Image (cartoon, rainbow, N blue to C red; front, side, top):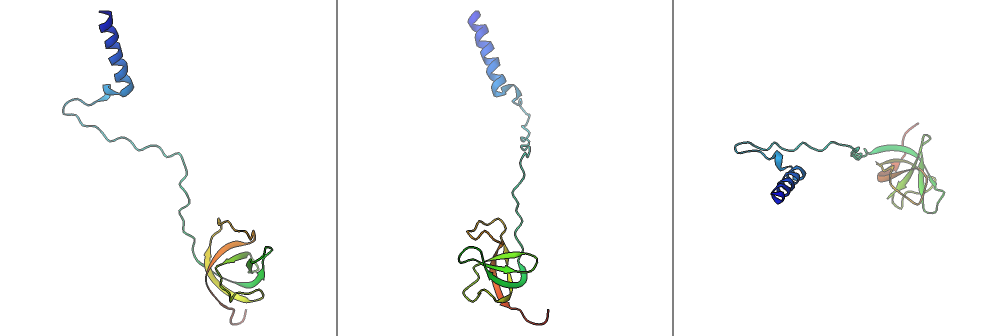
Length: 122
């Protein structure tokens, strides 16, 4: 008798742990589980928009770094091409990459798509 009581207690405890007491009966359907609560902030999924900026190219503080000074901010020119040299006044179209790590440590990184000379009056 004592072993039957222990066995019954074990089954009841197992059912409580594995939630077999919540199993639907015949003809009943399981409801889908609720989605987990969101506790984290999703990563920033915004894609940087291309910009067109105008300024003067200067040498950066680190070797082989070119910076476009616009008067309002500085852009570190990435993939600018050999024709971009210090002293040139340019209009540059590119995509800012503010989170990109560089060795230049100056200006907002800007992946250059196109460059051209400054034309017309200011």
